[in-house]
Length: 415
Ligand code: PLP
Figure 1 (cartoon, rainbow, N blue to C red):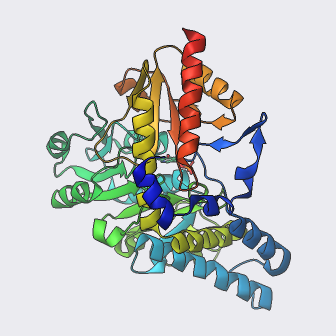
Figure 2: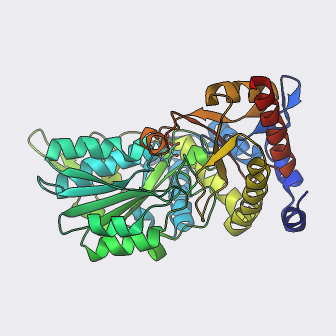
Figure 3: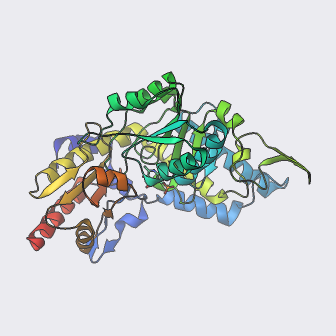
């Protein structure tokens, strides 16, 4: 084991942490499961599984509507979870947090609602060349509908945004800059504070797609200064079907609803409806109550471990994995940014990613192969797809050894 990881072992007991995750002790095809698809979705600690079970078994009720005990209690837990999200993201006011089903819905909400209020013909929206489709398609649709233009920040060969080019794209026509904090295809950590500052100087608003950052590092939206910041619960050890978006209150107040119906209204007559203030205005219908409670528990769990400890340990895992894979002949790492999250995308000269991941699976190793919902990124790097090993704080260096060994076997098989 490398020295940094051994030093971390004292501060960060990964064997103990692994005991919190029941799924990690299983075998796949007779081999210990090596789960390295954490950028797609993360596993849940026992605490979250148990909290969800207990809520459903003993405390379940609807929220916001009734005056009886179960409803009051569920509403209290629900709003406490909103506060936990606000604290995790560094938001000033929990009312700035709107729950959605995840980042995809969060970006669609902002594209629809901010877009229809603030984006007009001739305006411009800026994204980057390394966005997930969830932070690409909604802006394309909006631009088409409003007669606006979509502009794209290019990246260098390491997968870093070229900031001088970004500055040239900004103008008084720019209404919004929408970029990810961490690229799911390459692992690049983008300089979002600088990006935000420059956008604001041009009079534009900023949305940060935080789907890949919130599980790995401490976030402070007030320090970043961004106007919107999204997250997905299922990528941060919480149940699927829940996520959300921080937005500045001054913006939420100006924005029209996205989905309409129950719970988002102030008054309804047959002639006219007035809307509830944020966040209720953007949370029509019965929300994902149980999932929100699970999210709150997952946040408590992350806080107990400490986001800084997580970031430090994952960085040493990334360094170790990068060194191991760099030593393999015929393997090219795609995405070599100076600042990276614990994710390694790679291509083999010998085999297509789909074959690679199928063969790795024979060794119990779960790695993603494909375009990672980032086809423009793949096009930029001249590949149809990559294999991607994405780590979490429950991964061990030994698992990266197993990955490297299995990749060597694949290369041998195809040569
Ligand atoms: N943005 C990024 C960077 C992602 O990695 C993902 C999911 O992989 C999404 C957006 C979409 O998130 P979700 O599927 O949770 O809505």
